Length: 340
Image 1 (cartoon, rainbow, N blue to C red):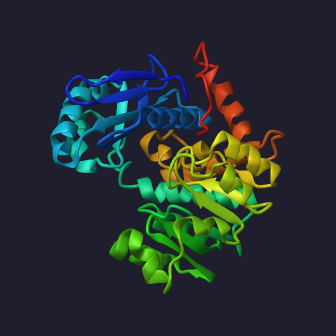
Image 2: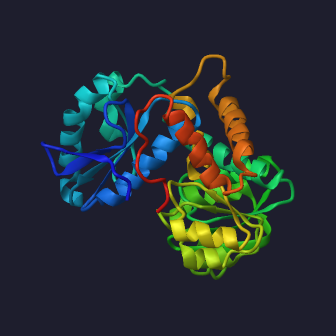
Image 3: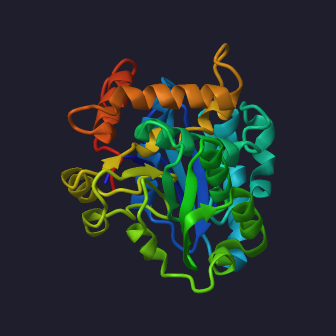
């Protein structure tokens, strides 16, 4: 596991995982009966590499509030009060994730220096980044088959961005099952289905949904993965078709063993910290880079092109590239790379 700095909360049961000491940090807060520190540490490390990949002097962070459902509102409110000074001082930027609503963090908005619309554009820019990464990695999505594992609230944006580039979504999986279509699913229908049914959308798409993991066996050129940390382990990787391009839609979906097996089998694994970087360009825009969508598309494409042909594969190549930037402003590199 990455060696990060764990700061325990004093007002409620929880913690902040800072990946870099004495540096501005940003990350998400999650709440559940038990948020694991190891998983949070991996998430923080992935974010550090994301910022470094696009030359931002910011470290990753990940926060957890441990609370039962009935106690969650009060626990998250206590968290907000405790971290508000860190947000005001520019030490920490916080976004909501599983178990925490955007509205729960509203008291922090006045102290947050990021553009007001950065949250509203999150799903759009995440979907754009994933599609751009896939488009770049396969040399163009036109006519390409894409399977989306872990289709969730960001799934419609990914499907729409894939369709805009000529690709077709031939399979999706959720926690409720999987659905496949050789002809591809209409992006608008996927969005409408998710809005109406949520994870049960698969039952609205096909008469008999498969098991969630069956999406890994679908014949596709691109496999989008992101349901959980380490979902592509060595067993899953061993079943990947030669030449398939694995594009993350969430943090650290590939294990170290999974990466090694995937590479031996001829699969290409795109770095999660590049593919999922779209929202960064709304939260931390750069003057002259263009509006967030165009800036994200240009930067993600260029960054991936630099590492696609790396002798050690694009994921490790991107790690080396991020570490080279970190070395320009950090005396010591973080220990451990963003792999589950």
